[in-house]
Picture 1 (tube, rainbow, N blue to C red):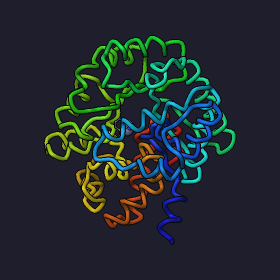
Picture 2: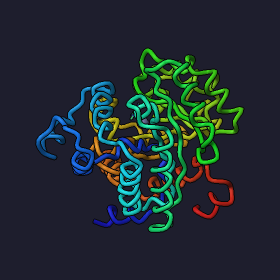
Picture 3: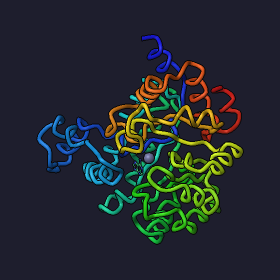
Picture 4: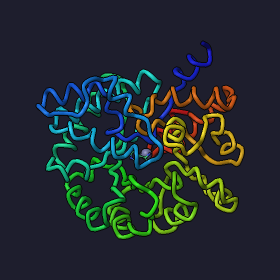
Length: 326
Ligand code: ADE
Ligand code: ZN
């Protein structure tokens, strides 16, 4: 219908996308075959049926297992190209994508293999669609800070190609305060900083991400809504929240899409954006996320324009590039 077309046609930036979370079951099978890896599924349907999660950890277990088929530079290239093609079809003109190097280096895949593959995919996206992209290296918070520091050292030769660092994986029990040194090292190297906080973790984790990690952008941030002083601060500081509605529903951060707080966030003056998180696992790409909340919360075109506009304002593009997109 009309609103569907409006959503797809709206130029937008994607700011919260884990490239490993864009691995569709079809590509998982193709890579398993190409790399001669046995996977514990007989069909694409069987894989999709396994994607029924009751919380973040439940999902992460399957997500890390799925990433095992990614072995070569070509695999990372093909993964990235598949995502960028899909994103471009949804009206994404700029994407700042997360990657989880530890998921790969811990399996013996060299950091350089991951980087070369992803960068080649980004170059293809630029050539095919004019889509620009940046990379955000995420540290896995269920591993310790020494491991994050070792990852950061492995990344050092590649820092010209990395826009920023992030913090993801199992949130509860792994607060931002455990990663102060590695985020300080990233800041010293001139990198941007983001962190997942307030997805399952309490508002106190969001405060730590702000005050101890010095984040430039907050990933998820849903649970900020439990603390009025915190939401007031986030609004005052024009902090961008990268909200992921289908993820929130699938990981039971909200019980129903009808309970999604996206409109409450906008009403509080928060710079909320809509993103897809792990689209292959949560049942939709960015336009599906816009559509799902628009339908569930009755968003109108003005709200949708605000959300898309926020995605450029919250991006790490420079001011001139942002203005060109508004
Ligand atoms: N890794 C991939 N998706 C994630 C999410 N939604 N939260 C934390 N870590 C993740
Ligand atoms: Zn995420």
